Image 1 (cartoon, rainbow, N blue to C red):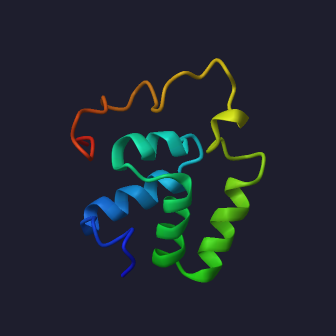
Image 2: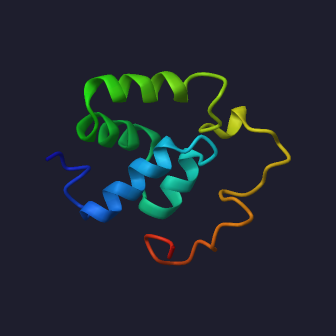
Length: 96
């Protein structure tokens, strides 16, 4: 296990991976909740996913479909989360 992943529980890793797969969740939201930079997220994804899944994820993140980078987002979107999603609290993982 790498130093990036050893600090997280299995549940936290699952949430990081889930957030990374979500097109509308920017890397800044993962940084805010888990203190992981985009480079750290890539490392986590590489270590936790099969090679083919990781390549598919990277292709999607770098395509025009994903809005993982705030520069690619519509400037009218000023939030990290869906309006129907529960508020992000001070907890490391928001309550579901």
